[in-house]
Image (cartoon, rainbow, N blue to C red; front, side, top):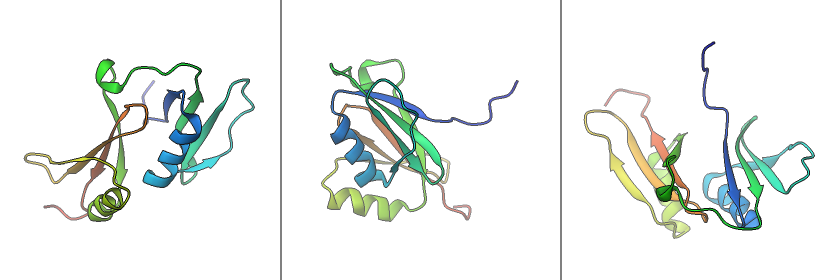
Amino acid sequence: MAVLRIDHVNIGTAKLPETKAFFEEVLGLKEGWRPNFPFPGAWLYAGDTAVVHLVGLSEPKGPSDKASLDHFAFAIDSYEETRAKLDALAIAYQAVEVPGAPIRQIFIRDLNGVNIELNYRPSAPA
């Protein structure tokens, strides 16, 4: 057995419509096919892959900084465009330069307090 990659993340939320809108507007994910589960939710896609599964809850859960799982990360294709979009949408973020590596990171939180890391790796070595 070998792990090939992370398949998706699952976020439970008492703010399903707002959380779905956040991932669509801020990160550009698109709602797509989801099995007919007997509970509310949405699958959000990056291209052909459902990378975020949302599950509607009646009561909110705690934020990431109160859990053992601190964050999940997405690779992004443009650091400057991402920062400009976050600025335009008035989304708070923290920009980080990774010491000794050509990686630039942006950390944001969704409406449920979930930490999301956005990683930019330039195609050419720094």
